[in-house]
Image (cartoon, rainbow, N blue to C red; front, side):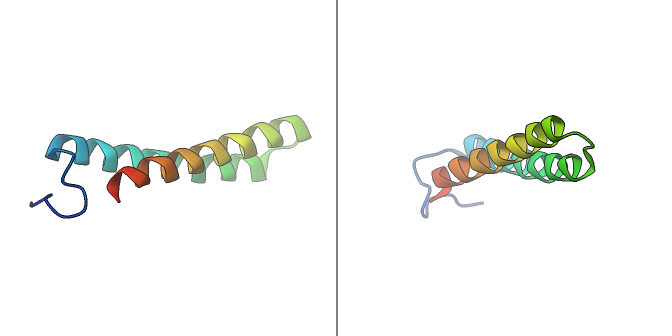
Length: 67
């Protein structure tokens, strides 16, 4: 795989790690959103909503390294 295009500053291992972390944060965001929807108390619902937002933001931040 040639990584010399838009992300030539990172090596193959870093690229694989970024992809893995992005997928993990995406999965975490989806799970936390689902947990928030099932929560029965406002405090727990807010906790999971905030966790989902944080995971989504981390995914966005990590994706910037690929630009």
